[in-house]
Length: 497
Image 1 (cartoon, rainbow, N blue to C red):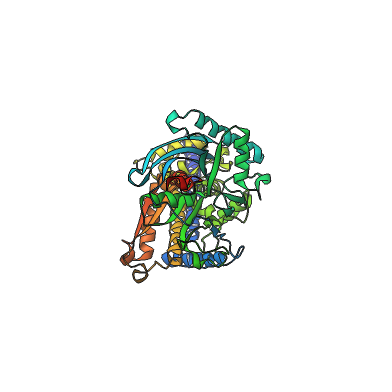
Image 2: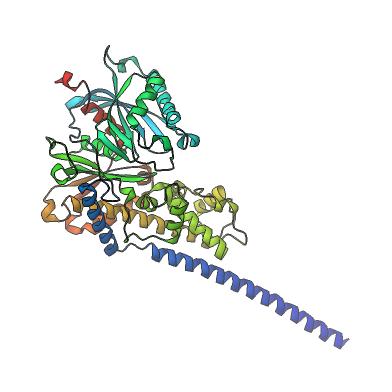
């Protein structure tokens, strides 16, 4: 009996040891997996680093490319497009004007009633519609017919007081937020699509002619008086209410900047110098690239898989279309190599662009003690349940790295413009304030991104200059700006003088 008991005890002890060994191995495996996740995080953070010295190099590179783009067509990755806007709104504009704002996956139709010097904007109204995905890659005629049909509905529903007098045509400002080669204030040919659009038969065509043909087919009696980029429109809208606005930046689905340049500083300008001595330049800064940009393996892979590989590199690390996708790619690697979401890689995490930047923003802004929003978003979007607090914190850390890099690089871009304008030191700037008109959903809604961008620019300019730079949110600036530019370029402007 004793022998049996001893044997049982030995066997029992062996089992306990075996179980303990399994537990230790499991813990070690978990620890090593977590260590792998932290290593991936650390490597990513280092690759995305944006110390002030690097940002100043990016700003200087931006300034150099601006000079090159103004010197000759094709001289730089920055197109530095001449907008033909040489007179920004003065506040004297009046009557009713329309705007069509095609900025990305959505577009808006606006009607703006202007009251002249004393009235400002008396009334504004808009309707919004989404572009069906099939029209983003279909034909030019199908896209513009869809837009013109929505415009027709908007006009048909308006009150009688907005009707034009007999013999007077409605006038429209067309905000077209894609790279165009402007040939006059109301004509321009498409250089290439961005933001997920890919319609080959529009490239090289005059987009105003395409729209006016579609309006004619849809029975809309309207003339396009001004073709503007969304950033130029934002600059015009900002200037209408603040005379110190000289730079505009869009940070939304994509990103771009425009600014007021001295006409004499544009070597490629061949026409007579405008009376104002100024010209608004549409930079198309989304296409900026430099060896100083902190690019990672995830950025290179995303670029390779994109519709426009090698193009819009700055946009792909700064703008709303891409931030969530960068985050997804890092999370996927962590899931594959470190099992942060369990033994199986969540299938939804393999879907490109499933993690949108608005969701990333919600995750980043989660201040609850258990990071409940993070857990809910992972469950709702990626079908990942029961994440632990440690994993949720890791996700928030990644959001912060992606957003901080994007915001600080955008700040470096603005610094590059301020340098080109010769306004980056107290001596050169004098007492004048530089107001930057900002628009776009990323800037408006992603609070951490916005605060980081503004604080970074102030830090880069230094304490003496910190009060000279002001950011102004020009809400709906691109649409209202287009209507204002239609007003200042109206066929009937002489009737009011």
